[in-house]
Image (tube, rainbow, N blue to C red):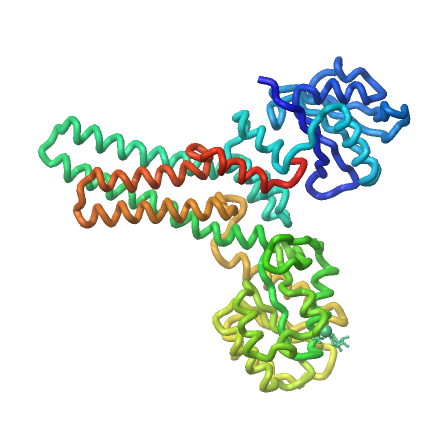
Length: 458
Ligand code: GDP
Ligand code: ZN
């Protein structure tokens, strides 16, 4: 089967100084060989890298010094011949290299098309393909390791096992009914169904629980910094951004087309919510009043409540304490370099068990303690990225919920003593929903839709 050769710019995760033009397909090696000044790429061994120059055939000029990696099918990501042209220059040079390959009859890749080919050629399954997308998007090391785990096929394995169990149960029950060895075969089958559905239900439930934490890892812990004017909110924000790796990401297509700021605090991705707003108006409480800010707080996964060591607690502070009730929050008492006028015992009491950190941002004190408290708050649950299979993908979560619902339908029917073939319908539906996660029962349109979400060049 002849497929078109595709190309795209593919910048490696981590965004170094190198940009890559990646080609995949039968023409990848011959076309690159034609443009390449150096070794004859048609004759080099597979999975080798070569220094040389890309020459624009139209004008005969050297466009770019490059390192070219040649990888022959089938041991490649797409299972096609793949060439990666590593360019050191800026975007202009990379774009020029891409253009030249396109002039040679190679087509620009659609978003996610490399990954789509990997999927269609059986190199990876659907959940692994989606993990690739997550890797592209993942914003911190922790989120990255979760995505890698998934790509390893751990989720696929788990889903595969659950489906197998359901299938075997259904098959078993069929056999029991067709070849009854005992008089109470109906009852036996029901008991078996009950046991199995309960087991699988428990596992789905667990997966959905960790999925919630996975979502935070991937999207960042929505963090709001609140406090009265002048307590040091902006200072705290700047400190967090400067002490840690800040990642500025554009989030197009979301309700607010804003630039959001991510900071990586000890492996916990914080998404500083409404950063611009806080910066410009200095204070969401000031701007919107306590009632409105209470609303804004509902979206926060974590609140940093800043107080002034140098002033007694005010009524406004008390209102803020009320506003954060029921939320995860950390109190930071700032300005310990000044005289103490705040009753810390009182603050501790109000905080009722939540961490209270004293700090002087100006003297760079207390920041370590704050960061530890953030990490402790986040990892307080049973989250452990090293050991768990996470579901970090919205589509997966949706399907898991549907599978769980179908399973609950089956369990309900069992309880009501409905006929087993009715129960089986719901068990089969569960099996199908789970199958969609790994792409077994996925329709073509679903696949197209998925891959079009991918970034270009992957
Ligand atoms: P915001 O209004 O809550 O955002 O507060 P800012 O971060 O803008 O800080 C208000 C003022 O307090 C600025 O003049 C800061 O330099 C000062 N400030 C911030 N942190 C400290 C601190 O730890 N000690 C002292 N003495 N001043 C601080
Ligand atoms: Zn400020």
